Image 1 (cartoon, one colour):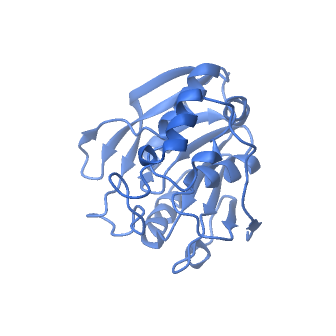
Image 2 (image 1 turned 90 degrees about the vertical axis):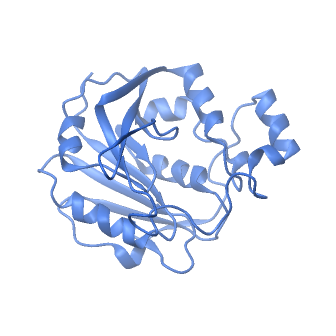
Length: 233
């Protein structure tokens, strides 16, 4: 079934320069039924509101009121709560170019399927697929339960949601058919999170025995939105 609109859902955390780059690209898009939902995941120094510009399409901005380390999964749940229909769900350091924006609208999509984009680096080199980017219908997202916020505060939890999706919908990898462009911090300094450690840090999920146990038992996700939030735009 072909979609007739698309919503881009992204979490933001101290990524002002990268958000400026998105707005520059978004302004080149041809007129289509398109919306952006941004969720500021508790930025303390450079909130997203500082970088919101006039756009020819709707932009909604939500803010999580406290800075929870590695709470991007909670931010995604908040964004998808307010989304409708077909969504492109990705991270702030992944750009949807004008060319690929137009390609997106030509794809034939089915609600019983989630789609994984291909990926290129900013220099044009092909790169492995991003483990946490999807073209997905809102109904399919919530049929899978959304992200399990029991894992919020820790890094390296993508596989849990992938397993949930795999249990409830088909997976199609688009490879070169449709791709996003990855911007590393060597290109834009604040393209991705810099404030908290990743692998081998205190935030690595595998270091937490309770999370390892929960992952093995694979219970249903806890109810979402376990934080205070507000809509700014």
